[in-house]
Length: 139
Image (cartoon, rainbow, N blue to C red; front, top):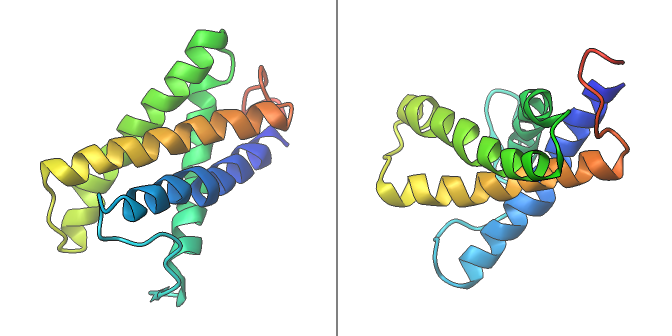
C-alpha cells in the first residue's frame, strides 16, 4: 500500500507544489509558461498537466525509496535534493532533446526549483498519509 501512497504523493505534489510554484513564477514574469496546461498531449490526448502529474506519481516511487527511512533532516533535505536533481536531469538530458526542446541554464535552474518543490511536496504528502518510515517493500 505504501507504493500507492508514494504514487499519490508524487501526483498531488505535481499538481500543488510544482504547478503552484510555476504559477507564482509565471505571475512574477519569471517564466513564460503558464501552469495547469490543459492542451492535449499524444499519444492519448490527455491534458498536459495530467500527463505531468502521472509522471510525477511515477517519480514518487523512487523518491520514496530514497527518503523513506531517513532522520528528519535527511528526510526533508533529501526529498528536496532528489526532487531537484533526478527528474530535472532526466528532463534536460533525455526528454527535452527527444522533443526537440532547447536546454539552457535557465531551464536547468527552473527545473531545479520546480522539482525541488515537488520533492518537498512528496515528503509532506507521505508524512500526512502516515507513510514515513515504511519502505516500498512493506505493502
